[in-house]
Length: 144
Image (cartoon, rainbow, N blue to C red):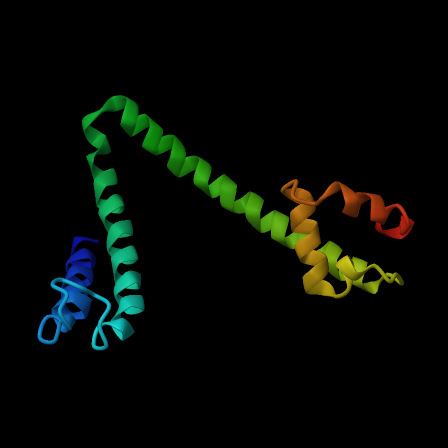
């Protein structure tokens, strides 16, 4: 992963908007908002994000110096697989119930279609479904 980090940093240097703006800086020193650099801001931010993730992945190698941190890293690596299994199961059940709700005969606009039903079911799961929408669901007993 250190080779990937080196590649990311080298590509960030090539995409650096400040370096592209330096020849014609339009009166501002060290600016990234010039005509030559504006189109490079998004690719540069993507490379910066990848580099930051790689930095933290390499930083996790230092966990071997402390027993507590090493134990925490071990537990996190074991638990993360369980979290992904839970998210896979959640997505499976949301997709199944969204398809089932779409097959029901109802005229609730919140559950009109598979994608809207899935979004509302995710909102219910994460506790983001408002109380007024719950009250509206009482008019549709099949959706309860």
